[in-house]
Image (tube, rainbow, N blue to C red; front, side):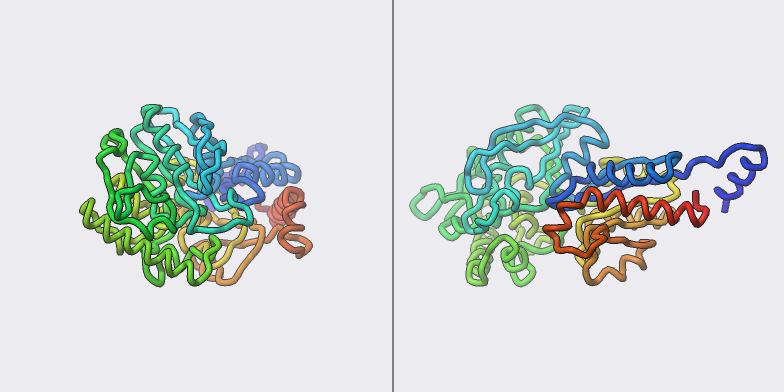
Length: 397
């Protein structure tokens, strides 16, 4: 009402109303569009219908694919390309980012240890997070003393031993030989040697952006819940679960750290628990961490509408995904939120109770996912145009 009164006063004096501020803050559409691309396409659709709109673009993430790009676009910094090992120990070009302070680095597991990197060969007993450890080590040696690691999207189930191995830890079998730093390799683990670990870890703060609260082991643990998504059969998932339980026992014995029941310890195939033990890391809700880092609350000030989005909005959104955090924060300030998504799944009714105003699928012809991906750019622009036309028709702008 206050904004309407201000507009009426300006009109009385012959001035045009101030353009509505629209904050566009989407997550990526995984495997299809980055969050920055979604911002640009929504902006294009809005402006083609409402040229005077005040659009503020703020890509967001929750620790998965796109976290580094979202942070760099929002606060600046430089991406550092680096050749590291992929989940199957093949050379690959990955990256991390150093922020403008020169002391903070942002790393995402998806860059070096992500599920898309393995293609159709999904075998969490054979994959390693070693490449992510190489990225962390490079950031440490560049002088970074705070590292934010996004745990989303990993192809691994190794309890973080791959990362730790790249940072100097040795994982030994009964004969004193180093085991493969993989989920399957943990079956032979007998002891952990920390004598050669990277000394810079002692002066580093490692923050883990995590979007799950699953423990390391058990029915809700990393292997049994997420292992099948990474290619594990029921038998393999059970063996991987036993391996992680064994890892927790040896961590408690050799390092004096209890991680078995740690909430979030099951993130990234147990890397959450492992890095708490190996590097003194802290687990933090990923969406909250990233939104704070990119300055979401500041960008929200004065907004009349927020547009968020993701590839698929469903019950998983309620488990702490980035759009949910956007909706919560906007609702606290009384700002309506509209979501543009690739697909709408089951279980989203509770999102309306939290503060979502409306959700629209950009799949305008109701075609299968692979076909929809081919026209996702045009469909997203067209959906943003349709939304803007409705807003203009109602006199909102």
